[in-house]
Length: 212
Image (cartoon, rainbow, N blue to C red; front, side, top):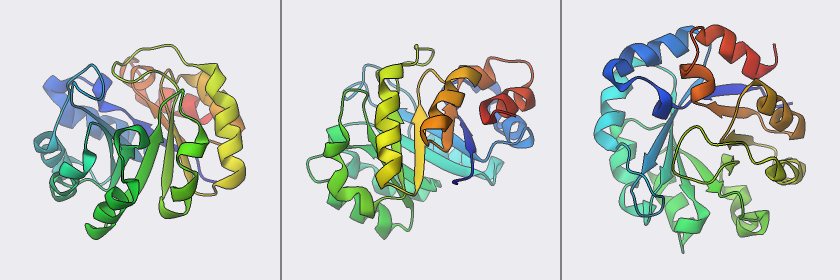
């Protein structure tokens, strides 16, 4: 059984005290920090770039999990790798040559993730599954925090676990209740934003996501 890992999404953190927020979730028991990168083209929102990742890197020893929701991700692999990312995840829908993106990420000695949108089937990534360390299954439409969990994605997680033994990450509409649903289907990396940063007790929130 894969260990349950919690990856707080800083998209929901207070950016006026981002360093302290990251320290707080680390102390509360999180294993990863999830960083959503959006370009206002692939998704209808604009967030952060490599400069912010570089500023975060000295504040924590946790794995920096960079989720690229951008067009032509190969253009930015080097920048995010050099900024301090440990894991770089790209969207299969944004890339015509996923093997080249994987090659680039490996060249910079980073872990590789591939993500699929809610309506994308597993067939889109089947050929590259042996080449990646993690699959991120999105359970909301991309772009904004605070959306409602799409339960019709659950069978996809279950099917993926039957054929993929590495990390399965789920992001979107996650709280203690939906975290239990995705864990039951085989997900082991839980991304949550509001469910952690929107509470007063980060430790309690993280324990709830683990089902403790």
